[in-house]
Length: 127
Image (cartoon, rainbow, N blue to C red; front, side, top):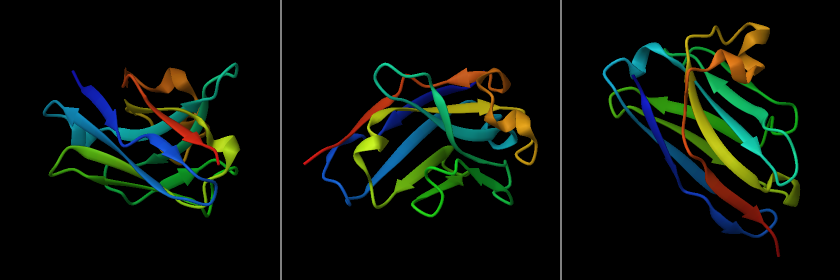
């Protein structure tokens, strides 16, 4: 069992930065692939980024590639999302998720591949 709690969201101007954190409880955190998804108002939840248990592999949605960086610290049972050059279209609720999915497969993009989800933290990009 893994419980996930996100933090770090808020209001930021276009071009600004935010760092999201996801704190996990449970002894098996280090064995899970971790991912961030987001859901904008009125839209379906979409994949943002994922990182393998060892941090050897990462994968990003095209919309955030080059601007966002996912990382993890297994000793702290935490995963992070550094978001730079934020745009209004990045406005959404951001959720972290844990699953036993291989980062290099198409399944990493699918919500159904993840067993545990956090409640989300809201990011608003606006001037």
